[in-house]
Length: 68
Image 1 (cartoon, rainbow, N blue to C red):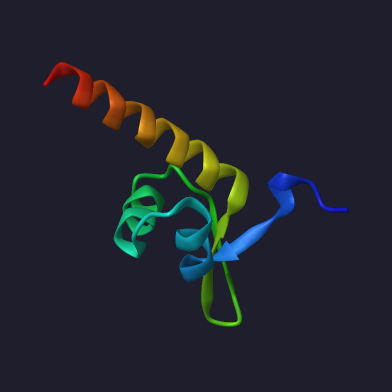
Image 2: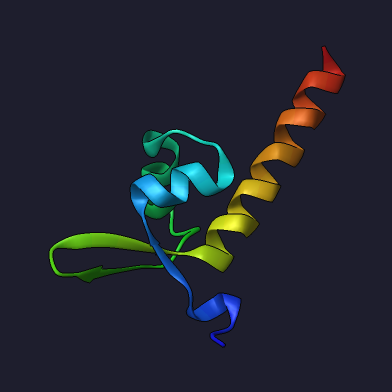
């Protein structure tokens, strides 16, 4: 069985996994928070990186909401 760091997902699948928009995933990619690779003309994102970026993003959202 492949480890989580070996798992890759297309952007639409990644969005469904962590319940964010494609734009959010592309921003994380652009900022270097999520590793990518191209396969058959499709952009794939690393699932482990994706989950880490999503968790950090949700923590920031909660902190911001607590300040209000």
